[in-house]
Length: 441
Image (cartoon, rainbow, N blue to C red; front, side, top):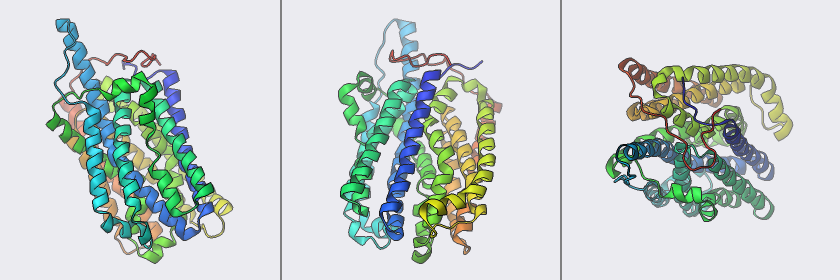
């Protein structure tokens, strides 16, 4: 019997937050190519991808914070039962550590902008100054990622939902303002970069957020940083394949081929959004659920894996039939793509979704090496496939489809060993925070 991790209302709330997040992503794709010409839109999509690659890397802070605060709170409660006290854990507070990681990455990103700006943005050399806004955004987002992870680990889903929705709404509001008053690559890029301050605003009004801001890890600083490193490596590899694919496609293609690839880039984004955006939103729920039910092992994956496979197969058929027609209908005759490409991209999104959920289970079972190793293997294989001298659409589909297979093999091997060797089982984490979190589903 599994322990409840999220109640019906909170589950629906997280789903609503994922829909808002997905809607914002769709809205940006609908607005920007309409306002900018095709070449400029391609450059902005590369910038957008690069920004969210770094957000994705810092997603490792969310995953590790979820695991750490779950174990830390559980250990504190065990000590309180045994000794009648609630002694503080001699471990670092997670938010300052997360911000330190983000500021360090932001500074390194700014310092190396002379190298990456021409490569990522091709002919947009004049936009190198945007590295300052992007670097500040990365530093600020580390706070958002850490706070979101702590809320998930404590099962404080209502506040989690409000923070995710607030971040998304602020982003689309700034994009709309940019479309009205500064409809340029620079205007859209700055709007996207400065939209991650919602958590700072939330600290002013939410006691729950302020409590999360002082939460401690379950281990000392050095092991906590090592685990963050593994989680960020895995999340970074995931981000490269999920949101950063236009960047690696840009780096592995000629300028002429990439400039003409706007239809492919839009198709990649639209085909993965229905699966991967909700799944990413529920990743904190998945990690918390696996932590609550560690004894289930691989059995916990079966219902989710079946659903992902079903959605991928049905989506591939519908995508192949309707996708090319819809792209031309909305964007115009320049956005032509073959049906097999759309269908293949949907199946590839399903493979990435499976890799995401197996990674969440690896992290919950403290298989950090396998967690990061699976994502790194998937990314390396995808990049190698993109270097093949074949058509850009074929390279894209093969990279996104075959790459995750290597990662799944590594994850399943580790999970099978964990199941065979026995997984340490701890008590379920009780609800924390008094918001109605953890109500039985």
